[in-house]
Length: 201
Image 1: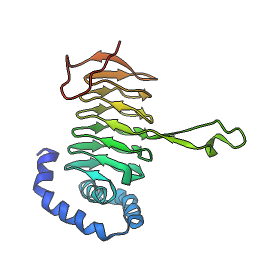
Image 2: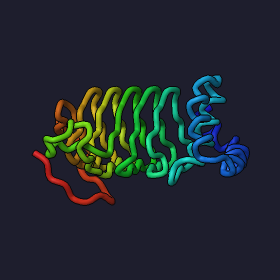
Image 3: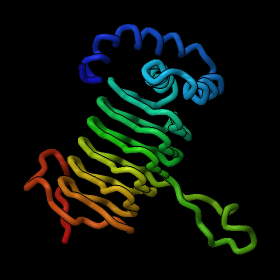
Image 4: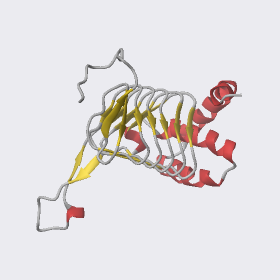
């Protein structure tokens, strides 16, 4: 049975549990998120889904979050349906993070929606102000293991980001992007409907 079929069978119970968690104070829910790593696999996935419904700005159906996933500023995180975020990923939504439907993020990937400045030489770089930049991951995107997606990036729909890539600029829909920094290496669809027009060389 596929995960989405199992989810739809359990959906009423999961949504009831998520609703009950709304009375839990946010700091307690964040603490419970960390503890969820100790639960058995399926129970942990179910509990993290319910907690995500409590913590995120928006969370769709059938969202799988693996063990060891760290969430920063989940109140600025929006996730669609049929999304998987695998083990030991790091998601920092300080500058806002939108993940649309049918997205898969492989293990040990990082999405960071802010960056440090270094203009004030009187203080260490780590104490300089940060600049936010919203990250948007379009529909049907596959992000390989160990990918780094930096602030201000938008990734078009039906796109593959190859393992180990560092994404520092926009990626058009319907392509494979790879490398450090990531560049388009292949077109996988002739045209993409519903996305803005893009140009790439």
